[in-house]
Length: 510
Ligand SMILES: Nc1ncnc2c1ncn2[C@@H]1O[C@H](COP(=O)(O)OP(=O)(O)OP(=O)(O)O)[C@@H](O)[C@H]1O
Ligand SMILES: [Mg+2]
Image 1 (cartoon, helix red, strand yellow):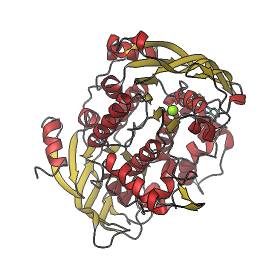
Image 2 (tube, protein in one colour):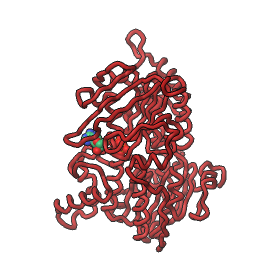
Image 3 (cartoon, protein in one colour):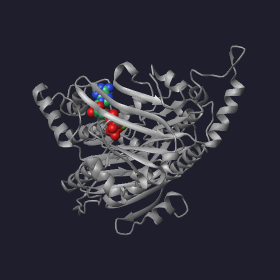
Image 4 (tube, protein in one colour):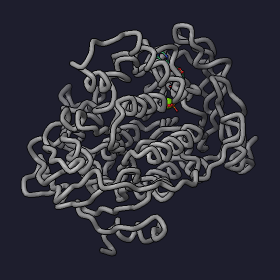
């Protein structure tokens, strides 16, 4: 279909929005055509989520300047349900499911089909079953959300958006928590919707997906639209240069770490599934890490990698067994505070659950592990604390008005940087990292890679869990592979290839 024949579904004109003096968007314009996938890209804090929140009624029409047109008609959206009624469905970057409620309840929350005024549960379960089948998600519709992992929650979120018969579907970083196979399913669903004429807005830091799925791309930088392009007219390098304002070398920084003696030794770590007795999430995993070493742990979603890190950090008090030694001293497996005191840090994958306290200041989030560390040794020096935090903002280029703003006001990627910066203030000797670059833009990723290398060179031991295979391959000195709770492979950096790692990760090769 030639562009001029594709009709315009949505137009956003001259959109500007500030948050107490900070400009998140300035004179931004955006249009979406029927049956197209339109990618929205830009660095952390560029304004992508803000534009999405304006379109989906999170910020009503009284909260910003500019105009929205749907099918050529001016449309003043007064709130989320108004946008939904107008056929705009969204999956936000920060998941919005209600944990104590079931999958089915969440999917139809607030718009339950009724018969004679009574919620028609049979109808709900029938429709939820069909939706779950459609996205190939094999879970019980009656399971509470809190029992699900992050990837499954993400997929439930997608099922919820699909249940709405949307004309416009907006996905803000939908694949951040998904595995390759799950991403393929999602991309297939998107293509299917596109062929049915749905207009799709796709926000992602994963440029491969952007190129695989989108028809057009709009690039935001510092709240302004740099340009809109046909995807086929762009190259990855050109797209990045437009986002960042300069060329970025995407190679992994070559670095050789000098390995010292073993600092962390884990022996037969086992984690019982708290929700199903007899099932093991982690099954007798043993390994050592040396000072200055980056140990990568590869595997598919559900392989038990996060659970392994959590157990080592003491976050599975009643369900983890095995032995752990730090610098030759035994460490109990049931006490995160002890783990922190002994010099462990833990960058978590789910920053909402374990990483950040969103309604507390950036300052507090940055320094509370540090305070715990130094507590009792001297009286807290507020000026020193603030100086330390301000320094961290500069060093990590965290986009925040000051250290006193709430952590929840930062963009997704900038929140992740706060989590990373916080643990390093604590000067750990062993740093456990679970998906540290999730939601992070290309430039910041390069900075984090450089930091990881510098930290290893300074003697820190790093255990890195990442679903990004090039990342694991590019950073690790040694790579362990897990499948179904067990170790199924070990490779040196030189021996590891994507194929051998995948073979071990799928359990094909042990
Ligand atoms: N509720 C808020 N209060 C104050 N500032 C905010 C709020 N929401 C967003 N901002 C600011 O607006 C700017 C744009 O943020 P936005 O979340 O739109 O970025 P983004 O492009 O989605 O980034 P990311 O890739 O990290 O998700 C940032 O500087 C952010 O700190
Ligand atoms: Mg965002």
